Every structure is written in C-alpha cells, then in structure tokens.
Amino acid sequence: MGCHVGAPHVMSRALGWLAVLVLGAGLVMGLGVAPREVIQGNVQRIMYLHVPAVIVAQYVAFAIVFMASIVYLWRRSETADAVAHASAEVGVVFMGVAIATGAIWGKPTWGTWWTWDARLTSAAVLFVMFLGYLLLRGMIEDRERAARYSAVVGIFASLNVVFVHFSVYWWRTLHQPPSLLRPGPATVSPSIRWALLVNIVAFALLYVYLVTKRVRLLRREAELGA
Amino acid sequence: MSADYWGFVAAAYGLAVVVLGGYWRALVRRERRLDSLAQRRTP
Image 1 (cartoon, rainbow over the protein chains, first blue to last red):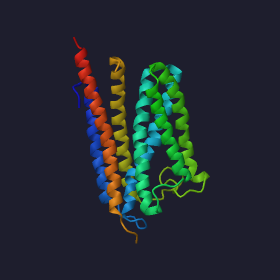
Image 2: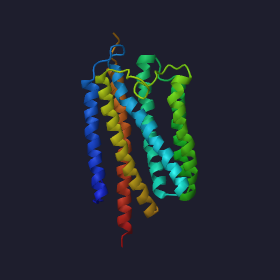
Image 3: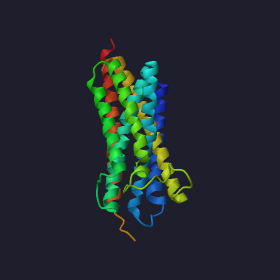
Image 4: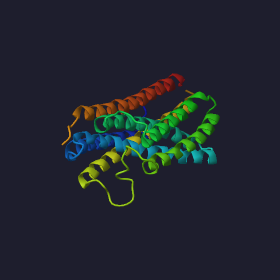
C-alpha cells in the first residue's frame, strides 16, 4: 500500500481492514443470517447491497460535497475542496453500484432492467450531474478556478438528493417508498433490519477509508504538481 | 412462492466487488506512481 509509514497511513490501513471485516460480517448477515423474504424470495438479498450503497452515496457522500463546497466558497480552504472532490468521486462509485444493482434486482422482480420511473430517473440525473462535476474538475487546469466552479456545481447537484428522496411520494412510482429513512415505525422485520444496518455501517466505513485515502492523494498530487 | 434467482444475486454482489475493488486498486496504483515520482524528485 505504498511506502508511507506515518501515523495517518497506519490509521488508514487499520480503517481499511476494519471496513473489510465489517463488510465480511455484512455479507454473512445478508446472505446467511437474514431470512428468505416471503414474497420476493432470495433475490431480495440484493437489498443488503443496493440500499447501503444508495444511503452512503446520497445521504453521506453528496451531503458532504454540499457542505465542503459551501465551506470552500466561504473560506477558500484547500482541504474543503479536496474533501468535496474525494467525496464526489467515491459517491459516484457508490451511486454507480446502487444503480447497477437496482437494475439487476429490477429484472426478476419488476420484469425490466430499467424504467423511466420518477425515482430511477431522478437517481440517474443525480449520477450524471456528479459525473459532470468530475469532468468539469478534470477539464479546468487552473486549480483555484476548477475548485470554485465545481463548488457551485457540487452545491446544485447535491440539492437533487431532495428530489430523489421525495420522488416516491411526489409521483406515482414503480419503486417502493423508503423502508428505513421514513417517519413512523419500521416496515421491515428486526432480522432484516439488523442485516441492513450492519451493511450500512460497512459501506460507511469503506466510504471513510476511500475518501481519506483519496484526500491524501489529492494533497500529494498538489504538492508534486502531478 | 417466487423463484430465488440466485444468479441475479451473484451478479449483483460480483459486480459490486469488481467496481469497488477496481476503484481501490486504481487508488493504490496512483499512490505508487506518486511515491515513485517523489523518489525521482528527491536529490
């Protein structure tokens, strides 16, 4: 994992192994411990991958892009810019996993890989907006200008999370409403909920590990002019 | 009772491993490239 042996590197390594450990536990919970769903059968186990990826991408990664972009525009902090950049990149990876696993889940349950349903469409728009954000960063050579423009784009793109979240309430959709992030009592059984929570923690740990690693690389790239 | 579609479950988990593992490997490769660049620049 490179030749750096400082405390941050050791911490990052430990965090990486912790993420792998909890991901392993999540895999056991999702594929073994959680019961077979009565209506959908075992294909519902894709949920333990799809839902954590969505939650971490939308409500953690893109929320952090939103906050870090505001901090950058306010303070011109290079750290805030690096955090926004890294969080957007990891968020796009997680969102890509969420969309792809959703399509794989959709085929046997809905009978189609994709439909222009409000939830799916708004999620795809969010994904494309963040791809555009990353392209914009790559296109502008001047670091300060790239940081400023992408902070503005990052704020607007992140606001789209509100549309994605409420799309299932505002429009008639094929996609079901949230099972966890909703007011009132939970609509899933405790064994399913626990498996889901372990996987959400695993994805959150993986997100923190990847973002800290990416931020460190962005700083080194800036130092070396790479 | 519906069919289980284990092939779809395997495809979803396999794809996640490939994408997340691929991104991690790309970061490691980038780190190594920066390490060698820093070493070359050290007098």
